[in-house]
Amino acid sequence: MLSLLLLAYSICTPALLARGQLAAAEAYTPTRVACPPDTSLIRLAGTGTSQSLNPSESAYVSSRQSLVLPAAWQSYLDNVQQQVEAKNVSALPDYVSDILSGANGSSAYPTFGIATSGGGYRAAIVGAGALNALDGRNASSVEAGTGGLLQAATYLAGLSGGNWLVTSLVQADFPTLPELVFQPNDASGWGGWNTEFSLESPTNDTVESLAYDFDLVTEIEAKFLAGYPVSIVDLWSRILARHFANGTNADNFFDSSLTHGAGITLSSLVNISSFASYSQPFPIVVADSRSWNANFSNLYPNSDDNVPLTNPIYEFSVYEMGSFDPSLAAFTPTEYLGTESGSDICTVGFDQLSFIAGTSSNVFNSLNYTSIVNGTGLLTSLLELLTYLSNDTATLDSAVTARYPNPFYGLNEGTYLDWNSTELSLVDGGDDGEGIPFMPLLVKAREVDVIWATDGAGNATNWADGYVVSATQARTELLSSTYDFPPVPADPATWHDQGLTTHPTFFGCNSSSPVPLLIYLANGAPPLGQAPVTNISTLALEFAADDVEAALSQMFDITTQGIATETDGIWEKDPEWPACLACAVVDRSRAKAGIERSGVCGTCMQRYCWS
Ligand SMILES: *[C@@H]1O[C@H](CO)[C@@H](O)[C@H](O)[C@H]1NC(C)=O
Ligand SMILES: *[C@@H]1O[C@H](CO)[C@@H](O)[C@H](O)[C@H]1NC(C)=O
Ligand SMILES: *[C@@H]1O[C@H](CO)[C@@H](O)[C@H](O)[C@H]1NC(C)=O
Ligand SMILES: *[C@@H]1O[C@H](CO)[C@@H](O)[C@H](O)[C@H]1NC(C)=O
Ligand SMILES: *[C@@H]1O[C@H](CO)[C@@H](O)[C@H](O)[C@H]1NC(C)=O
Ligand SMILES: *[C@@H]1O[C@H](CO)[C@@H](O)[C@H](O)[C@H]1NC(C)=O
Ligand SMILES: *[C@@H]1O[C@H](CO)[C@@H](O)[C@H](O)[C@H]1NC(C)=O
Ligand SMILES: *[C@@H]1O[C@H](CO)[C@@H](O)[C@H](O)[C@H]1NC(C)=O
Ligand SMILES: *[C@@H]1O[C@H](CO)[C@@H](O)[C@H](O)[C@H]1NC(C)=O
Ligand SMILES: *[C@@H]1O[C@H](CO)[C@@H](O)[C@H](O)[C@H]1NC(C)=O
Ligand SMILES: *[C@@H]1O[C@H](CO)[C@@H](O)[C@H](O)[C@H]1NC(C)=O
Ligand SMILES: *[C@@H]1O[C@H](CO)[C@@H](O)[C@H](O)[C@H]1NC(C)=O
Image 1 (cartoon, helix red, strand yellow):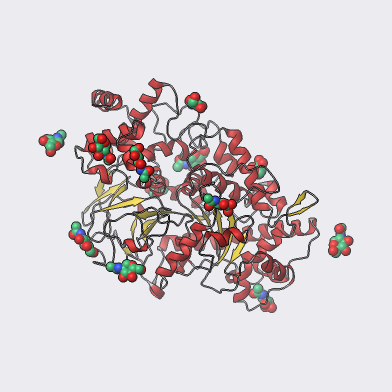
Image 2 (spheres, rainbow, N blue to C red):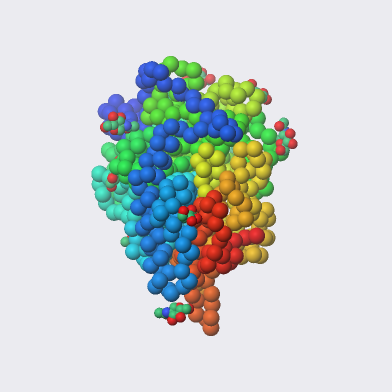
């Protein structure tokens, strides 16, 4: 029997389409254009010493490093030093200021990357709270001595829930984090995350709900009719767009006449003013791939059964999409995603920001598929509708992956997993067990010295337990000719027993470049004797603004406390934590200059390093 949605849909859509009222559907539909002359749709990125970055990325990074970062590092250094003086703790050794003030030349600056984890809305909120504590625009963060580090980052990588944070931040023109989350009612532009509207069912009004579901399906239908593969991830994308892309606020949430973020493409973000002025860290989003040809002996325990660690991991930037993994080592321009391999007709508009955000957070591959197919909820009727639209029950399998015409078809026969597949089946960036997007920051051509990782992933109790970091270690061991990672514990017991998730921990202190130093901050326990609010369920899909505010505020304390101490029931943040953080940030630059650790940096590195 047809669901009510399907029935309404089959009757009404032709009329709606004919009246041309569906601005969002039109904006979401890719279009075919003549391919640009003399442009290759494949960039071979090379491996080993011949590995290369996209020239546009290199140009962005080098402009940011020369035009923006010197002032950003100076400003961060000033903030740390003010806090050191205010707390009357031991002064930083001279090498810290030599490096961060530029006194020792531009080559002494560290290359700093931030990775923000998956874990649903919890990860987005926890990640935002950590970035806020590192944001030089927030007076409390400046006073805490951690503010300014966000501005000094060269890269910002996100996956799944963390990718919602990263993509929304870029496209909203890099507002402060509270503005990003709460910005009310900017009708033409950014409208906040709209957390009070559930991702699953944003209204209890049956009529409004039906109309909403109907809009979602209608919005992706034109893409399907234009000959592009669609799946449940397209619907997910249209839901996410109402939260993490411009154009939707509490007043217009259900307004069917608006585009709700459709038409905003990843490649178009080069024109966002803070990007054009190199004022943002270079954003990167990560997705995994599913393939039935995979080597299933490389599954990480507790990961999605379909995604072994050796499957290619794809990264998306405003410029290109592809993988530095040695089996592929190739990229295609983001702007022309959706183009069939070998075609001389190119596609534009496939790289909808919301679709990429949906790809990186595609949890459907790991949901209980039986319960969706034979369920009663929205997903069931949407799936039914998709099946109806595509007139093909065989699509039930592909219906749960993000479907991309494979730009790399035919490449690296036999070694690249999807060399003979005309479509890529992309899934959540954390599905292989790696809940933190480390891989892009381990690409040697990027020369990242130090990584800040916020871990908002959750175990059964919704606290981070470090396991997702161990997964990256396992992957880099399998791909050791291409990636290096600092040593971390392999088992959850060590993370737990040594308290590595309840305060910031540095990894790789005794390694040297090109192994980056890792500054790891987990959402592993509440801070300072506070009652916990950040152990939000991964399944929570809506939040009152007050609850988000409380979580951001608690995350501020988690990020600024260091190794807190208790005396007679009075909790105190580590007054040296900001100095210790600065010591870690410059540590690879220090080593390259052949200087020994000294002063407070010596004791700090002993206190915060895992050995
Ligand atoms: C700062 O610390 C030093 C040494 O620990 C101490 O001698 C001095 O009195 C302190 N100054 C203030 C203002 O607390
Ligand atoms: C900075 O330059 C001074 C003078 O050349 C040198 O002694 C010192 O080792 C350098 N420090 C760093 C961190 O490069
Ligand atoms: C989103 O809105 C903000 C203003 O709220 C604006 O600065 C930014 O450019 C807009 N982004 C896009 C992609 O339209
Ligand atoms: C819908 O109903 C549920 C259960 O009564 C309630 O928790 C939720 O807040 C309601 N949602 C809206 C948007 O009114
Ligand atoms: C960026 O803006 C320029 C100038 O307006 C325009 O020519 C170009 O097409 C835009 N690029 C994208 C990707 O939207
Ligand atoms: C699959 O991976 C395992 C473990 O890494 C390896 O020993 C084996 O050779 C691989 N199998 C194939 C067919 O590549
Ligand atoms: C759904 O239920 C039907 C009837 O019980 C069953 O035949 C079918 O296999 C189920 N579908 C899935 C995907 O489990
Ligand atoms: C999936 O859902 C079905 C139907 O709700 C249930 O019978 C089955 O046990 C579930 N499977 C798993 C692995 O949870
Ligand atoms: C749907 O598939 C059936 C069976 O394969 C076929 O007879 C029918 O023509 C198809 N309908 C459309 C609209 O493609
Ligand atoms: C694709 O290639 C793999 C080997 O790389 C092979 O196992 C598989 O059967 C091929 N699939 C198809 C559809 O040809
Ligand atoms: C989850 O992690 C927390 C924090 O490390 C730990 O206390 C708890 O025992 C873990 N729970 C499970 C079920 O692994
Ligand atoms: C700075 O961060 C704190 C802690 O989350 C927050 O309460 C405050 O509103 C923020 N200030 C601004 C101006 O964003």
